[in-house]
Image 1: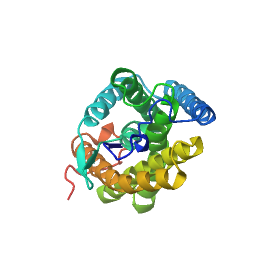
Image 2 (image 1 turned 180 degrees about the horizontal axis):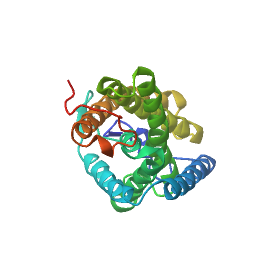
Image 3 (image 1 turned 60 degrees about the vertical axis):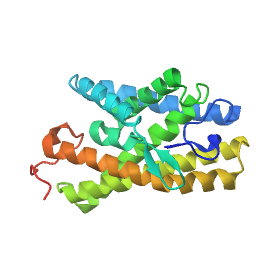
Length: 231
């Protein structure tokens, strides 16, 4: 996501007061429904040993988001983490992890508004976790599930697309709310997040590559056979 852009209302962390009531309520409904479904699926399908991994993943994403990387134009971006959480934990547990991260950011650090938290979780977390994971899964299945090259390509593409999808969703919400004209909102958000998505893809591939080498069993969908090296 982007920080220090020319228009504060064009960051992915939407502040309070920038969304109309109907748009905000709509995003809250979608977010709460998806979180409810995710919670039920985690309770039904995940073992207790997954809980510590969820905590570690949440802590890593939270810490990684504190590190900014420069992009053209004198601004910066940082990890969103939805696709990363989905690849590590699956879409259900990953959804809960990123939701907790964004709630903590909003409440403790005022990074995004409280009343629009539903939109921020939906845009930056749920779109990336659900959409990013299933896109990653589809690409990996097409290219060959057991090879590192297919996993790296799937991870990079899904990470980049998830950031772009979040930017487009944010622009649509701001446009519908009348905060910013559609052309400005979508144009500015999409342009800057082309570069931020590249940073997201690089960080996610490096992280997943390290886990692939060291502990591939921690991945939600690990390879049946793997090599310790990526050559």
